[in-house]
Image (cartoon, rainbow, N blue to C red):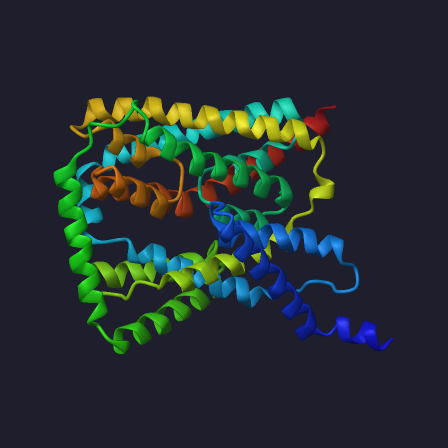
Length: 376
């Protein structure tokens, strides 16, 4: 009885979960696995919650919400006057490319749904390139969505992007045509911005902490989708564009945010409920491959519409993380301002436009199914 009471204590359960997460993150980091602080905790909490029956893992919602505030702030901080000008100059093209990319994702989701027998809404949410964190949070907020399938499809797509995009960019297909001067100018701007941020002091940092938390709570109160991420993102972007230079988050804090999210997602996953695992995995890899191939085709079209290199065009449209595409763009001397502009536009479009559109689509599909049942 004593052992049982100790193992069920909230603090013991929380410490056990944290130990699992940190072990997974450290191991994945030592093995140089991509996104170690997200995928490591996710994997270890998933395994640990089933391997050990004496202690039931626990990860309160407020920890996840804290991580979402940090991520929202970090994304909002990327919104600068440079990216705003780039978005303004190529707004029609950005909207067109975002639309065709999402249309391709919808087509691939429909194919997977037909071949696997999985519900189309679940597969669609797992196929939209809005980021693992955002889509899992959105899936959790939407009724009738299989969270395990969504997370599985998102992880497969993410890993495919992480491994394939760098290989393609550094291959003979793209090497040799990047805009060195544009990249150098942008890097200089980033360096100057970092120096300015470093001299802002604690006052601005405290200001951003207060407004980010307040924005998250307000967004949650008015039932905003993904409130703890979008609230801080919006207020940070407004302040940053207005000239209030916010301090960049240190790497360790961003890693901690990934641990918080990865742990939360790992405990939500129910792989035992995933039917036909091998078939779904094959379909997920195939759809991710087709998505990357489609991105290459769209990037060729983009180079015809604007005088930019094929490398810059591909990285601008690649359905990966904004920070990762920016790092690769810097390594190959692509135009970082254009890459960041396209990635930010698609990120913000998906964060704001996709949730209500998906809800409208799901309501229409539900209504259609009910009408079909009545006609039968």
